[in-house]
Length: 207
Image (cartoon, rainbow, N blue to C red; front, side, top):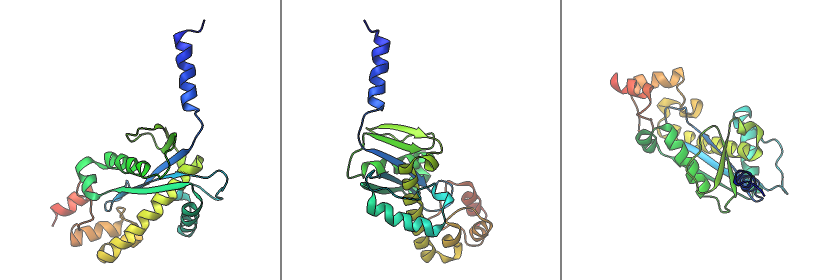
């Protein structure tokens, strides 16, 4: 007769190995001083593979753009979502990132049986989920999500640049570069700056 412990172990394995659709999730924009944080969720089609998927940070802008279009065309479904600057300032960047991830998964047209999330933290989901450190480099669905999130956020930065050209968002994408910090000192913070981030707080105090 099987013990209760061995039965529980078998049931756990059956759940984690359940067949079905798997979604990869990743984010872009946790570190910058401005703009929303963006997350994407992707369910790839095994019958329609995409060549060249990798961690978006390791790809050129040109290749990311090309893969972005291919992912949108070939994936079974995908979803891009974000958490606003106001939400980042109210919740903190970690919680806002998890919120964006939750929204991205909720936006999928098809419901996966399991979600693989890059990193070591999981959003609150009603689906089985696993955090995978370095998953954007090793799991194709997460790589695809990282590319969608990165390209989407970079495009948002171009929009931010057209509204606030003095900050150079098209170049540094909101990160705290020397040029960006100088602009903060010279012009103060604009509407898209994260006022909970220390360099922005210092710039506001000095103006």
